[in-house]
Image 1 (cartoon, rainbow, N blue to C red):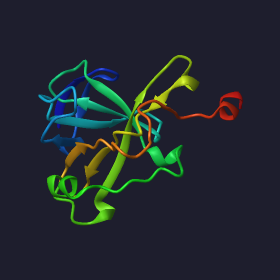
Image 2: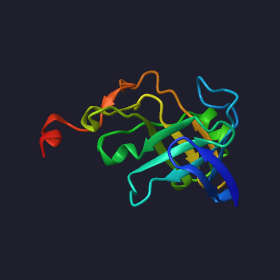
Image 3: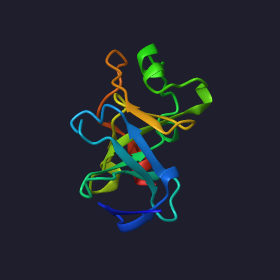
Image 4: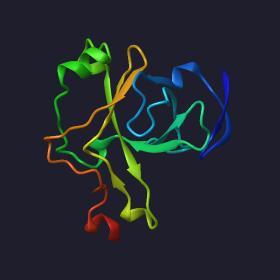
Length: 147
């Protein structure tokens, strides 16, 4: 167990199984190489990708397929190689949210998913340049907002 200072959870104890290594960092945060993926209590939809070295750096993330059912992309060979990704089922995709008040205005960055190799704890943010996906895609439709 490692003690972490976090942006959203205060001080917590984290297991090594929750740590992920971003060899090239994340765009805009190239010096940040190690993050913990921390669940929100009593919530299996949203997590925090928390820097292990910078307490104030944490991203709220979620599974994009939970709200964008037609979301799809193909990883390029360099990403597959960088992550040493041998089996497609070892890949986990999450997207960073831009949380807004009220929550119904929250958006997701579908143009740059985070790809995690669950077999070796390597991760990378991938930029989907020609995908047509947006960096600020609403996660709720206007109809869902009213429910």
